[in-house]
Image 1 (cartoon, helix red, strand yellow):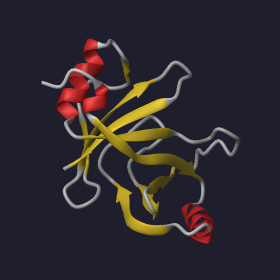
Image 2 (cartoon, rainbow, N blue to C red):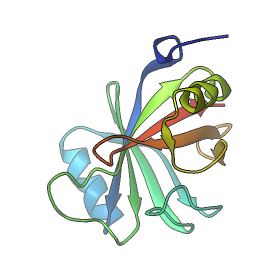
Image 3 (cartoon, one colour):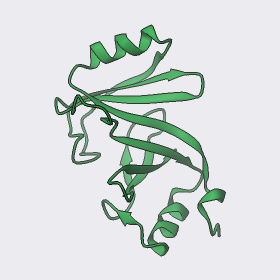
Image 4 (cartoon, rainbow, N blue to C red):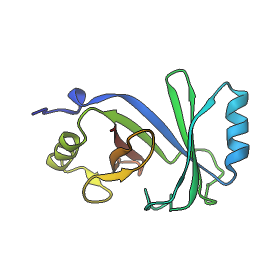
Length: 140
């Protein structure tokens, strides 16, 4: 059993950016060299309070950087408006057990699922000391 996050976290998976206009956001990041690598509509359940079902979602990649942008019509349009940072983990169940052991502020009980990418993803989200959201995410 893995006893620390260093053994579980393998890197940055993505940065979550809410938007009021997904096409405008995609066009902007394409100017910077990003390419759309996955696009879908979140029609299942709510991923978080700010991301509800029926939202357009796009993942844009430039090298090792991935931005997840989703049109929620509630973007703050201010500095610091990024919604979350997602860390790639190799074992989501072990990461959740460790977060519970460390008494971290887990937003929703249990592991969540979204049908993104080829086989979906499992994730959970904690809240940091500055009210930032940190998502632990495993590709399936």
